[in-house]
Amino acid sequence: MRDRVVNKMITDLEITGFRGFDKFRLHDLGRVNLLVGINNGGKTSILEAIEFLASQGDLRPISAAIMRRGEYMWSDSQREVSDLEIDACRLFHGYNMDADTCFTIRGKCKNTTNTVQAAIIENGSDNSSEQIEFPGPYLLKLIWNLSDVREVKLRLSHQGGLSYSRLGRRYNRNPSEQTSKAFFISTDSLSMDEVVPLFEDIVLTPEEQLVIESIKIIEPTIERIASVSGKKGVFIKSLGIRGGLVVKCKGIRQRIPIGSMGDGIWRMLGIALALVKAKDGILLIDEIDTDLHFTVMEDLWKLITQAANRLNVQVFATTHNSDCWRSLADVLCDDNAVNDGVTIQRIEKDKKESVAFTEEEIVIAAERETEVR
Image (cartoon, rainbow, N blue to C red; front, side, top):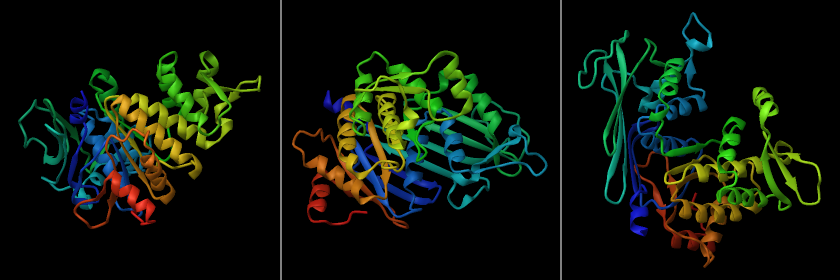
Protein backbone atom coordinates (compact mmCIF):
# COMPACT_ATOMS: atom_id res chain seq x y z
CA MET A 1 0.00 0.00 0.00
CA ARG A 2 2.83 2.39 0.84
CA ASP A 3 4.51 1.80 -2.56
CA ARG A 4 1.24 2.42 -4.40
CA VAL A 5 0.88 5.83 -2.70
CA VAL A 6 4.49 6.90 -3.21
CA ASN A 7 4.36 5.98 -6.92
CA LYS A 8 1.89 8.82 -7.53
CA MET A 9 4.27 11.48 -6.21
CA ILE A 10 6.61 13.51 -8.39
CA THR A 11 10.18 12.50 -7.56
CA ASP A 12 11.96 14.51 -10.25
CA LEU A 13 10.88 17.64 -12.13
CA GLU A 14 12.48 18.96 -15.32
CA ILE A 15 11.63 22.40 -16.74
CA THR A 16 12.79 23.60 -20.16
CA GLY A 17 12.02 27.01 -21.68
CA PHE A 18 9.41 28.01 -19.07
CA ARG A 19 9.37 31.56 -17.65
CA GLY A 20 12.82 32.36 -16.20
CA PHE A 21 14.18 28.85 -16.73
CA ASP A 22 16.14 27.83 -19.79
CA LYS A 23 16.72 24.43 -18.19
CA PHE A 24 16.17 23.46 -14.58
CA ARG A 25 15.71 20.30 -12.53
CA LEU A 26 14.45 19.45 -9.05
CA HIS A 27 15.44 16.01 -7.81
CA ASP A 28 14.88 13.65 -4.87
CA LEU A 29 11.47 15.18 -4.13
CA GLY A 30 9.37 13.87 -1.26
CA ARG A 31 5.91 14.08 0.21
CA VAL A 32 6.54 17.62 1.56
CA ASN A 33 8.96 19.95 -0.23
CA LEU A 34 9.97 23.45 0.86
CA LEU A 35 11.50 25.66 -1.84
CA VAL A 36 13.92 28.34 -0.61
CA GLY A 37 16.06 30.93 -2.37
CA ILE A 38 16.49 34.60 -3.20
CA ASN A 39 13.78 36.93 -4.48
CA ASN A 40 13.02 36.57 -8.19
CA GLY A 41 14.83 33.25 -8.24
CA GLY A 42 11.97 31.27 -9.77
CA LYS A 43 10.30 29.59 -6.77
CA THR A 44 6.79 30.69 -7.75
CA SER A 45 7.46 29.72 -11.37
CA ILE A 46 8.26 26.19 -10.20
CA LEU A 47 4.92 26.02 -8.41
CA GLU A 48 3.21 27.20 -11.59
CA ALA A 49 5.07 24.60 -13.65
CA ILE A 50 3.79 21.85 -11.37
CA GLU A 51 0.29 23.33 -11.54
CA PHE A 52 0.36 23.26 -15.35
CA LEU A 53 1.66 19.69 -15.37
CA ALA A 54 -1.12 18.52 -13.07
CA SER A 55 -3.87 20.46 -14.87
CA GLN A 56 -4.47 17.58 -17.32
CA GLY A 57 -6.02 19.79 -19.98
CA ASP A 58 -7.89 22.12 -17.62
CA LEU A 59 -7.19 25.66 -18.85
CA ARG A 60 -7.91 27.47 -15.59
CA PRO A 61 -4.35 27.22 -14.16
CA ILE A 62 -2.92 28.98 -17.23
CA SER A 63 -5.35 31.87 -16.92
CA ALA A 64 -5.09 32.06 -13.12
CA ALA A 65 -1.28 32.06 -13.03
CA ILE A 66 -1.00 34.90 -15.52
CA MET A 67 -3.75 36.96 -13.88
CA ARG A 68 -2.15 36.54 -10.43
CA ARG A 69 0.94 38.26 -11.78
CA GLY A 70 -0.97 41.02 -13.55
CA GLU A 71 0.26 39.82 -16.94
CA TYR A 72 -2.67 40.99 -19.00
CA MET A 73 -3.35 43.65 -21.64
CA TRP A 74 -6.05 45.29 -23.72
CA SER A 75 -6.06 46.14 -27.38
CA ASP A 76 -5.09 49.72 -28.21
CA SER A 77 -8.64 50.78 -28.99
CA GLN A 78 -10.66 48.88 -26.37
CA ARG A 79 -10.74 48.73 -22.56
CA GLU A 80 -13.82 46.58 -21.96
CA VAL A 81 -13.55 43.47 -19.78
CA SER A 82 -14.51 41.37 -22.79
CA ASP A 83 -11.41 42.68 -24.60
CA LEU A 84 -8.99 41.65 -21.83
CA GLU A 85 -6.17 39.40 -23.02
CA ILE A 86 -3.70 37.41 -20.95
CA ASP A 87 -0.12 37.87 -22.08
CA ALA A 88 0.91 34.40 -23.24
CA CYS A 89 4.51 35.35 -24.06
CA ARG A 90 5.25 35.59 -20.32
CA LEU A 91 5.08 31.80 -20.13
CA PHE A 92 8.08 31.37 -22.42
CA HIS A 93 11.74 31.83 -21.54
CA GLY A 94 12.94 35.18 -22.87
CA TYR A 95 9.33 36.21 -23.56
CA ASN A 96 9.78 34.88 -27.10
CA MET A 97 6.68 34.50 -29.29
CA ASP A 98 8.20 33.35 -32.58
CA ALA A 99 6.95 30.25 -34.39
CA ASP A 100 8.31 27.03 -32.86
CA THR A 101 8.98 28.67 -29.49
CA CYS A 102 8.14 26.06 -26.86
CA PHE A 103 8.44 24.94 -23.26
CA THR A 104 8.32 21.49 -21.69
CA ILE A 105 7.56 20.45 -18.11
CA ARG A 106 8.24 16.83 -17.22
CA GLY A 107 7.41 15.16 -13.92
CA LYS A 108 8.85 11.76 -13.14
CA CYS A 109 7.16 9.43 -10.69
CA LYS A 110 8.51 6.05 -9.60
CA ASN A 111 7.06 4.14 -12.55
CA THR A 112 5.75 6.82 -14.93
CA THR A 113 6.64 10.16 -16.54
CA ASN A 114 4.05 12.88 -17.22
CA THR A 115 4.69 15.78 -19.59
CA VAL A 116 3.07 19.01 -20.69
CA GLN A 117 4.40 20.77 -23.78
CA ALA A 118 3.45 24.18 -25.16
CA ALA A 119 4.45 25.58 -28.52
CA ILE A 120 3.74 28.58 -30.71
CA ILE A 121 2.74 27.31 -34.15
CA GLU A 122 1.68 29.01 -37.33
CA ASN A 123 -2.05 28.98 -37.93
CA GLY A 124 -2.89 26.15 -40.33
CA SER A 125 0.54 24.49 -40.03
CA ASP A 126 -0.59 21.61 -37.83
CA ASN A 127 -3.23 19.08 -38.90
CA SER A 128 -2.59 16.49 -36.20
CA SER A 129 -5.99 17.10 -34.59
CA GLU A 130 -9.32 18.51 -35.65
CA GLN A 131 -9.22 21.59 -37.87
CA ILE A 132 -9.78 24.85 -36.00
CA GLU A 133 -10.44 27.89 -38.18
CA PHE A 134 -8.87 30.85 -36.38
CA PRO A 135 -7.82 34.21 -37.80
CA GLY A 136 -4.41 35.48 -36.80
CA PRO A 137 -0.90 34.19 -37.57
CA TYR A 138 -0.25 31.99 -34.52
CA LEU A 139 -1.82 29.40 -32.23
CA LEU A 140 -0.75 28.23 -28.80
CA LYS A 141 -0.70 24.44 -28.83
CA LEU A 142 -0.70 22.52 -25.53
CA ILE A 143 -0.23 18.76 -25.22
CA TRP A 144 -0.48 16.78 -22.00
CA ASN A 145 1.07 13.29 -22.14
CA LEU A 146 -0.42 11.54 -19.14
CA SER A 147 -2.28 8.22 -19.07
CA ASP A 148 -3.70 9.48 -22.37
CA VAL A 149 -2.83 12.37 -24.69
CA ARG A 150 -4.81 15.59 -24.42
CA GLU A 151 -4.35 18.43 -26.88
CA VAL A 152 -5.66 21.99 -26.85
CA LYS A 153 -5.18 24.77 -29.43
CA LEU A 154 -5.80 28.39 -28.52
CA ARG A 155 -5.92 31.37 -30.87
CA LEU A 156 -3.41 34.13 -30.21
CA SER A 157 -4.16 37.72 -31.08
CA HIS A 158 -1.81 39.80 -33.22
CA GLN A 159 -0.22 41.13 -30.01
CA GLY A 160 0.31 37.63 -28.61
CA GLY A 161 -2.59 37.52 -26.17
CA LEU A 162 -5.18 34.91 -25.24
CA SER A 163 -8.77 36.10 -24.95
CA TYR A 164 -9.74 35.94 -21.29
CA SER A 165 -13.46 35.74 -22.07
CA ARG A 166 -12.91 33.00 -24.66
CA LEU A 167 -10.94 30.93 -22.14
CA GLY A 168 -13.70 31.45 -19.59
CA ARG A 169 -16.41 30.28 -21.97
CA ARG A 170 -14.37 27.27 -22.94
CA TYR A 171 -13.77 25.76 -19.50
CA ASN A 172 -17.05 26.88 -17.96
CA ARG A 173 -18.89 25.11 -20.76
CA ASN A 174 -17.16 21.80 -19.99
CA PRO A 175 -17.09 21.31 -16.20
CA SER A 176 -16.44 17.59 -16.64
CA GLU A 177 -13.08 18.49 -18.22
CA GLN A 178 -11.90 20.40 -15.13
CA THR A 179 -9.57 17.66 -14.01
CA SER A 180 -6.65 19.49 -12.41
CA LYS A 181 -4.99 17.52 -9.62
CA ALA A 182 -3.25 20.58 -8.12
CA PHE A 183 -4.55 23.29 -5.79
CA PHE A 184 -2.67 26.63 -5.61
CA ILE A 185 -2.67 29.06 -2.67
CA SER A 186 -1.09 32.41 -3.52
CA THR A 187 0.32 34.99 -1.13
CA ASP A 188 -3.12 36.65 -1.17
CA SER A 189 -4.60 33.48 0.38
CA LEU A 190 -7.97 32.14 -0.75
CA SER A 191 -10.93 34.37 -1.52
CA MET A 192 -14.29 34.08 0.17
CA ASP A 193 -15.67 32.62 -3.07
CA GLU A 194 -13.18 29.76 -2.66
CA VAL A 195 -13.23 29.30 1.13
CA VAL A 196 -16.99 29.07 1.74
CA PRO A 197 -17.74 26.29 -0.80
CA LEU A 198 -14.68 24.34 0.37
CA PHE A 199 -15.86 24.54 3.96
CA GLU A 200 -19.43 23.59 3.10
CA ASP A 201 -18.11 20.50 1.31
CA ILE A 202 -16.53 19.14 4.52
CA VAL A 203 -19.27 19.96 7.04
CA LEU A 204 -20.23 16.83 9.03
CA THR A 205 -17.31 14.85 7.57
CA PRO A 206 -14.20 13.64 9.42
CA GLU A 207 -12.18 16.43 7.79
CA GLU A 208 -14.21 19.17 9.49
CA GLN A 209 -12.33 18.51 12.73
CA LEU A 210 -8.99 18.83 10.93
CA VAL A 211 -9.99 22.30 9.78
CA ILE A 212 -11.15 23.36 13.25
CA GLU A 213 -7.93 22.08 14.80
CA SER A 214 -5.91 24.07 12.27
CA ILE A 215 -7.33 27.45 13.27
CA LYS A 216 -7.18 26.52 16.96
CA ILE A 217 -3.41 26.62 16.47
CA ILE A 218 -3.82 30.41 16.43
CA GLU A 219 -6.94 30.80 18.61
CA PRO A 220 -7.41 27.83 20.99
CA THR A 221 -10.84 29.03 22.21
CA ILE A 222 -12.52 28.38 18.85
CA GLU A 223 -15.06 25.56 19.13
CA ARG A 224 -17.05 25.60 15.89
CA ILE A 225 -17.21 27.18 12.42
CA ALA A 226 -20.34 27.82 10.36
CA SER A 227 -21.07 29.43 7.01
CA VAL A 228 -23.50 32.32 6.59
CA SER A 229 -25.99 30.87 4.13
CA GLY A 230 -29.06 32.05 2.29
CA LYS A 231 -29.66 35.68 1.30
CA LYS A 232 -27.13 36.97 3.83
CA GLY A 233 -24.40 34.88 2.28
CA VAL A 234 -25.31 36.01 -1.23
CA PHE A 235 -25.16 39.65 -0.13
CA ILE A 236 -21.78 39.22 1.56
CA LYS A 237 -20.45 37.45 -1.53
CA SER A 238 -21.63 40.34 -3.70
CA LEU A 239 -19.49 42.73 -1.65
CA GLY A 240 -16.37 40.72 -2.40
CA ILE A 241 -15.18 40.95 1.21
CA ARG A 242 -13.49 38.43 3.45
CA GLY A 243 -16.26 36.70 5.35
CA GLY A 244 -19.07 34.25 4.82
CA LEU A 245 -18.04 32.27 7.92
CA VAL A 246 -18.58 32.78 11.63
CA VAL A 247 -16.97 31.05 14.61
CA LYS A 248 -18.08 30.12 18.11
CA CYS A 249 -15.48 30.71 20.83
CA LYS A 250 -15.51 29.25 24.32
CA GLY A 251 -17.07 31.60 26.86
CA ILE A 252 -18.52 33.98 24.26
CA ARG A 253 -22.21 33.76 23.38
CA GLN A 254 -22.14 35.81 20.20
CA ARG A 255 -21.02 34.46 16.86
CA ILE A 256 -17.81 36.11 15.68
CA PRO A 257 -17.22 36.90 11.99
CA ILE A 258 -14.06 35.09 11.01
CA GLY A 259 -12.82 38.17 9.19
CA SER A 260 -12.52 40.00 12.51
CA MET A 261 -10.04 37.46 13.88
CA GLY A 262 -7.07 38.49 11.78
CA ASP A 263 -5.24 37.47 8.64
CA GLY A 264 -3.47 34.55 10.31
CA ILE A 265 -6.74 32.71 11.02
CA TRP A 266 -7.83 33.18 7.39
CA ARG A 267 -4.47 31.95 6.07
CA MET A 268 -4.50 28.88 8.31
CA LEU A 269 -8.10 28.10 7.38
CA GLY A 270 -7.27 28.28 3.68
CA ILE A 271 -4.29 25.94 4.02
CA ALA A 272 -6.32 23.35 5.93
CA LEU A 273 -9.23 23.48 3.46
CA ALA A 274 -6.81 23.23 0.55
CA LEU A 275 -5.17 20.14 2.08
CA VAL A 276 -8.56 18.44 2.09
CA LYS A 277 -9.40 19.65 -1.42
CA ALA A 278 -6.06 18.36 -2.75
CA LYS A 279 -6.66 14.79 -1.58
CA ASP A 280 -4.81 12.32 -3.85
CA GLY A 281 -3.24 15.31 -5.63
CA ILE A 282 -0.84 18.21 -5.14
CA LEU A 283 -0.99 21.29 -2.90
CA LEU A 284 1.05 24.35 -3.90
CA ILE A 285 1.53 27.15 -1.34
CA ASP A 286 3.37 30.34 -2.26
CA GLU A 287 5.13 31.99 0.73
CA ILE A 288 3.57 29.58 3.19
CA ASP A 289 4.38 31.73 6.25
CA THR A 290 2.47 34.78 4.92
CA ASP A 291 0.43 36.41 7.75
CA LEU A 292 1.65 33.77 10.24
CA HIS A 293 3.77 34.47 13.32
CA PHE A 294 6.87 32.30 13.65
CA THR A 295 5.54 30.78 16.90
CA VAL A 296 2.79 28.88 15.04
CA MET A 297 4.96 27.53 12.22
CA GLU A 298 5.96 24.31 13.99
CA ASP A 299 2.31 23.41 14.62
CA LEU A 300 1.48 24.24 11.01
CA TRP A 301 4.19 21.88 9.76
CA LYS A 302 2.87 19.14 12.04
CA LEU A 303 -0.58 19.65 10.55
CA ILE A 304 0.76 19.57 7.00
CA THR A 305 3.05 16.54 7.35
CA GLN A 306 0.42 14.43 9.08
CA ALA A 307 -2.54 15.47 6.90
CA ALA A 308 -0.53 15.18 3.68
CA ASN A 309 0.41 11.62 4.52
CA ARG A 310 -3.13 10.63 5.53
CA LEU A 311 -4.81 12.31 2.55
CA ASN A 312 -2.12 11.29 0.02
CA VAL A 313 -1.22 14.88 -0.86
CA GLN A 314 2.17 15.97 -2.16
CA VAL A 315 3.00 19.46 -0.90
CA PHE A 316 5.24 22.10 -2.47
CA ALA A 317 5.68 25.37 -0.56
CA THR A 318 7.98 28.39 -0.81
CA THR A 319 9.48 30.70 1.82
CA HIS A 320 12.11 33.38 2.41
CA ASN A 321 11.95 32.99 6.17
CA SER A 322 14.58 31.15 8.21
CA ASP A 323 12.05 30.60 11.04
CA CYS A 324 9.90 28.68 8.55
CA TRP A 325 12.49 26.07 7.58
CA ARG A 326 13.87 25.81 11.14
CA SER A 327 10.36 25.06 12.39
CA LEU A 328 10.19 22.27 9.82
CA ALA A 329 13.48 20.94 11.17
CA ASP A 330 12.02 20.96 14.70
CA VAL A 331 9.11 18.82 13.49
CA LEU A 332 11.53 16.35 11.91
CA CYS A 333 13.30 15.99 15.25
CA ASP A 334 10.05 14.76 16.83
CA ASP A 335 10.00 10.97 16.94
CA ASN A 336 6.21 11.05 16.67
CA ALA A 337 6.18 13.11 13.48
CA VAL A 338 5.00 11.57 10.23
CA ASN A 339 8.09 11.91 8.05
CA ASP A 340 7.23 10.43 4.68
CA GLY A 341 9.90 12.12 2.61
CA VAL A 342 10.46 15.77 3.54
CA THR A 343 12.95 17.88 1.55
CA ILE A 344 14.21 21.42 1.32
CA GLN A 345 15.08 22.47 -2.23
CA ARG A 346 17.35 25.50 -2.59
CA ILE A 347 16.77 27.35 -5.86
CA GLU A 348 19.84 29.25 -7.01
CA LYS A 349 19.55 31.67 -9.91
CA ASP A 350 21.44 30.66 -13.05
CA LYS A 351 21.97 27.14 -11.72
CA LYS A 352 20.65 24.14 -13.67
CA GLU A 353 19.32 22.18 -10.70
CA SER A 354 18.27 22.60 -7.11
CA VAL A 355 20.33 21.79 -4.04
CA ALA A 356 18.31 19.13 -2.22
CA PHE A 357 18.43 18.63 1.56
CA THR A 358 17.12 15.36 3.01
CA GLU A 359 15.36 15.10 6.37
CA GLU A 360 18.62 14.19 8.12
CA GLU A 361 20.47 17.06 6.45
CA ILE A 362 17.73 19.52 7.40
CA VAL A 363 18.01 18.54 11.06
CA ILE A 364 21.82 18.72 11.00
CA ALA A 365 21.73 22.15 9.34
CA ALA A 366 19.39 23.45 12.03
CA GLU A 367 21.50 22.01 14.87
CA ARG A 368 24.66 23.56 13.44
CA GLU A 369 22.87 26.83 12.62
CA THR A 370 23.82 26.44 8.98
CA GLU A 371 21.85 28.58 6.55
CA VAL A 372 20.14 26.54 3.81
CA ARG A 373 18.45 29.46 2.03
